[in-house]
Length: 240
Image 1 (cartoon, rainbow, N blue to C red):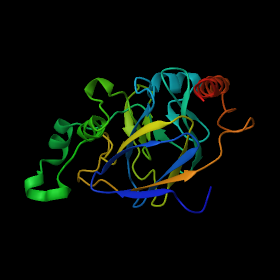
Image 2: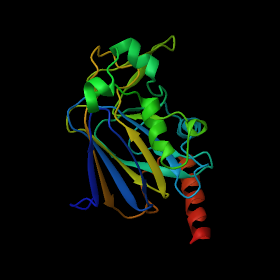
Image 3: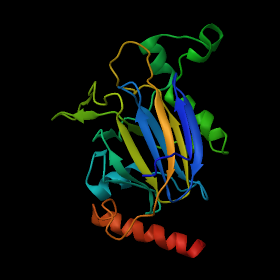
Image 4: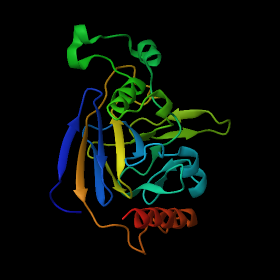
């Protein structure tokens, strides 16, 4: 990884962000305080009807959560991003995001008029605000990732949030395999048992990095990833 980032920004107070990160770059997200949650959506920036697909990502790799060296698949059988480094080891794929009703019932209400930038936000509205900047809306919402958060299932299928999973300084790196619209917010995980509204800060950094090689760990971690990388490379070869 190069020593200097091309771009850096810190999200705080349930911050939100979106931007197009091109193929051949890596996004590093760092949990600055510990206990952060980074809700993420991914879209093909050149054709946004193609987007991250949670069922294909999980079934093709025989997983319930993501970590290094797994990949994030699109609904067109291609790889949007690969998890090339990860100090956390488990990121939730199944629990979605908070909405206005959940936040109000759990934490109460605090408006912008009374709290300014520290007003209470929710993940769904943050996603929609960022999507609107790119001509997208409610019909484009899909199940999101929750980076830094761990949720486990018991024998009955009941899901439980694991507090303290991500210590301060934890980070995850995603190498973009396509030109990708990345949409993020740092609202708390919907199953977070913390009774206090306290979104944690996350730093974003973007680095220029080489494309995946033939012996890349992410490419070869599952047979389905090999096929998805081939689909991705054919896509770019035809568009070059």
